Amino acid sequence: MRIILLGAPGVGKGTQSKMLCEHYAIPHISTGDILRQHVQDKTELGRKAEALMSKGQLVPDDLILALVEDRLSEEDAAAGFLLDGFPRTLPQAVGIDAILGRHDTAIDGIIAIDVDQKVLQSRLVARRSCPQCGTVYNLVIAPPKVNDICDVCGHKGLVQRDDDKPATIRERLEVYHQHTAPLLSYYRPSGLLHEIDGDGNVDEIFQSIMAALSPAE
Ligand code: AMP
Image: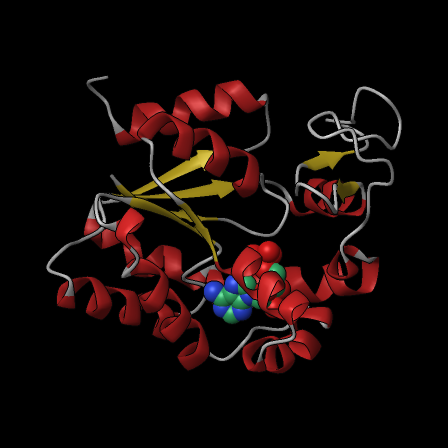
């Protein structure tokens, strides 16, 4: 199964990605996660991306497309994958079609999760993650069982991403509306796009996505 997951920052792409990747046993390919790893490792790409990311702006398309093509040629992506946070612009959408064409394959389904802008802002401000294992929490709707302690690895001290600060959140949502939302019109005629209401219970949203992707399951 080859899936693209679209949606503004904070719609729950990370949570749903995890569940879908477990269900289909496919790798979760998040361009944001890959870029954060480059920033942490201080690679050349990481140095180029860091300033843009901290301002909530997009990393140039050619860098992103090269990164995605590299990742998709790894062995674990041969039988399927989920792309999270990519494509984010029209040139990236055109680029991924060309990449998949070169690999003689294609996308099976595109999921776009939609959540009201006000809800997104409050979700993003409350987002925290574990710096040790990467588990993501929301202090309002999905807090850890014990305050400030990761449920999964027991690390103490959850952190807020730099780009989840209010001014950067506004910029990221603006960038989404300007560059990424137009992808919905690009994908609608393909018949592969499923638009899902993301304002609800995590399991219900997952069921709606599953019903859209695999109606017979
Ligand atoms: P995310 O974790 O998906 O919210 O991404 C965090 C940041 O990484 C974004 O705000 C962008 O600066 C950068 N980024 C991630 N994916 C892309 C992409 N497909 N195109 C351009 N920039 C990206």
